[in-house]
Image 1 (cartoon, rainbow, N blue to C red):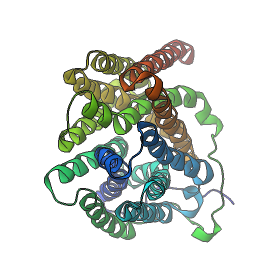
Image 2 (image 1 turned 90 degrees about the horizontal axis):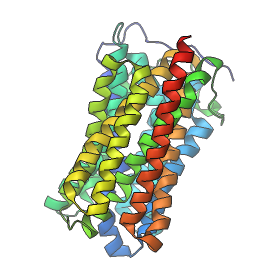
Image 3 (image 1 turned 30 degrees about the vertical axis):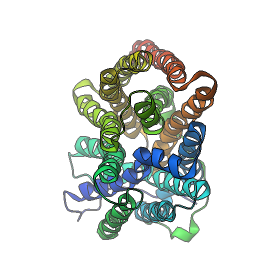
Length: 402
């Protein structure tokens, strides 16, 4: 199977990349839609906090499996077929949650959600960049990463508001998402393909993401920053609702969804700073801001106070956003077009390991230590990793310049 050249078709309308970014956001919103609802599922089904983290991690492992097996398949069969398959998986996830038949169906819903995110993450990022008009690549890069983070943030906000103020809290959020998915399917169906000479979807074969030589020099620092940043987001989307409810006495699901949303909103704000900083400087500075966010998180856990947690969401999210956009920009800039989807997929493999492994660790430590103490251990470990990443990048910069 040979790689196909990619590029922007000459007749594409200028705002076409925004349509692809909107579909990207809708798909990613479905992956965090259950976040404020885990407490309701625990009441109805009855499972421990460890099982919450395991169900959450099933999603992350679904993402990783897809990225590893078919992460760069869109480079040969085209972007649109892969993204349409991702929307189908997202719809299947919503149906599984609507069936609400216990832990097995919840796990199936999370797995399908992971498949949808895995199919979208690298492919949609490359697709948005390729649909950008001439001279609009920087705006398209922001649109892609903002759609990723913005969609993830809107999921818990939407479900939290509907669960708190509308009837049928475990039904309506997923019905609304199915409607949005139908609209996204129509948008993607109308957009053009950007891979020239794309092969039929049936010819797709599992292939690991590959790193061409041009990418390898920037991949390690970019991957380390993505791992640390996504680990913080994993905590906010998996165990922060339990901490808010059990330790801080916050039972309003709309408020819980809003606080989780703030982490992704902070990520989007952090991404806005990157053009002024430059992608190379954005990654180490993002690590520094991320450490400040982790310190605020530790303060909230140690003293059981809400305000530092809100600030941790904004500050830590900003650090994650700076690091993510810097990493995506650095890799997209050096990757050949025919390997761009695979290189970005490889980056997100590392990032989603950051979501899954630390979150499971918190779930395991929560039983013997308690949720707050487990969170403190997490914050300390991630701060050390972020500091190591930042120092590595700062030391590498002079040698790279030389």
